Length: 278
Image 1: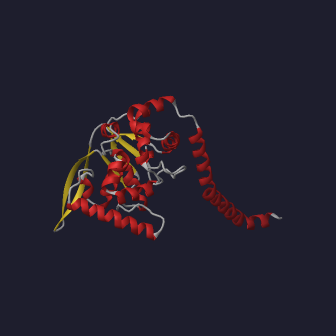
Image 2: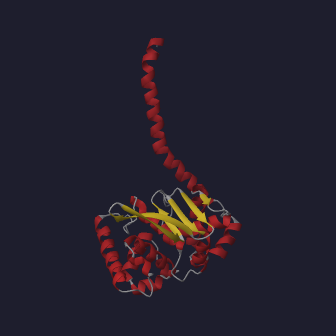
Image 3: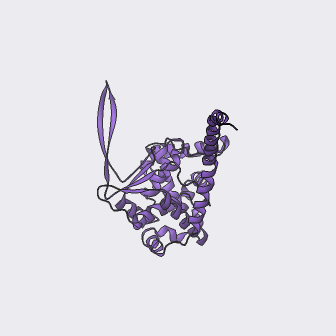
């Protein structure tokens, strides 16, 4: 091949190389990610992390041994992949990471190798409740600022924001039906389509319709008549209803099954878990 031939063929060679690299990145990256996650799940779980779980997340002790083992693998993947950012002086320690990761991974526990919150980019942790400012249009071109003090929030941009004292408080009693970390990570699951609407992804139209019917009816019941089990905040909108009943599903499963058996059944299918057996 002459120099002229090489020069003529160079653009095609470069294009072929670029396509090859793109294909390798497209198909190789998931394989490499899966392999790395497998390695993380099979690593020994640090003894110091086990002590944190016993002290901070007593719900873990109720799990069957095989689910405890699976949860620890999920925690190792989560901590490896998700950055934690301390805000307003909050220090990020292993205690913070493990406590939050354990609760986030409870929602993934029904899956042996879940896609670990693919839209989640970072977890922001505050040393106390935090203030958010929202603009609300009140008509006639006027905008009103609303200040809200929150214990947690989940954003569609891929952030979960948590107050560390509220995380600790929510995890300390695994039977009271209130857990801010479970609540906010349920929103992340709900935001699989980019918006929280109380309709997390379900695999086919019939299942989606059954979910909408069951959850919609329970939501309307809560709006019309306060519940002794489900926090009234769940009546705010379908997204909050889903997050609130997720808290109850994991912390008061027998009560939820007795009071709202259809809701419990839908959540059991979604999470692939039956916590009444724990």
